[in-house]
Amino acid sequence: MHFGFRRFQRRDKKNDGQIKSIRQKLAGQSVVLVGLMGAGKTAIGKRLAAKLEIDFVDADTEIELAAGKSIEDIFAEHGEAYFRDGEKRVIARLLKERTQVLATGGGAFINDETRHSILQNALSIWLRADLDTLMQRVSRRSNRPLLQTDDPKAVMQKLIDERYPVYAEAHMVVQSRNVPHDVIVSEIVKELDKYLTAKQNKA
Ligand code: S3P
Image 1: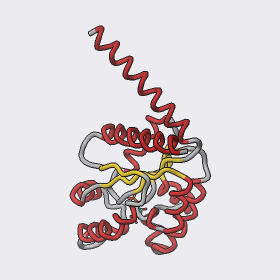
Image 2: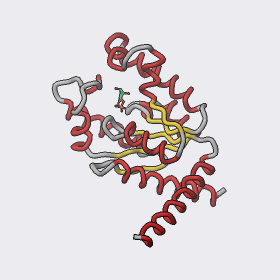
Image 3: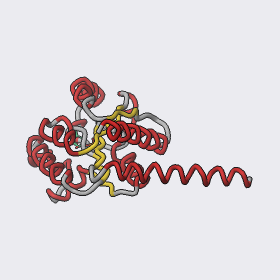
Image 4: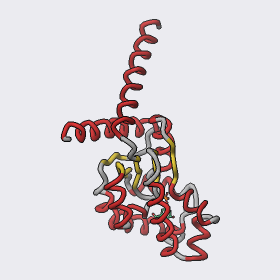
């Protein structure tokens, strides 16, 4: 019992050091999560931000706040092109803010301007997931305009085919799957540490 507790304390301290060092190495840059609908960007992003002790921001929520209406209403009343334009502007603004974990909507990184800006000014992590995992997760809610079709699975497969080569440009990739979110968060922290340390050693 006693030894177990001491071991726990030691591991916790090591973890604190790793988190602090990641924050220092980020030097003001944000961590941006990219990937398809259902990849877990928001759920995992919130936990990652808590772990890194930095703010969490959800780009879609910020777009809704700026527009004063939901994503569904923006699509329905103004169309996708209008939404994409707002998305681009909101993310450009968010990238200028201090270090944060930023969850982006699935289409954000596909926009050339947004992607270049994220690649230049932030650290991007692609949360990659397979079709079944994505479908299982998105079927819990019906708030995604792109999936309001007769065959959402076919749409998702098409998006995988079109977007995965683009998401692959992200700085890091972590496989999102059906394990507790904290497992994925730990893998992200490990990847971030590895990436930032290698970058520092190269400089
Ligand atoms: C979209 C993904 C959504 C939202 C909008 C369009 C996309 O965000 O931005 O419905 O093009 O993939 P999530 O990826 O957070 O679901």
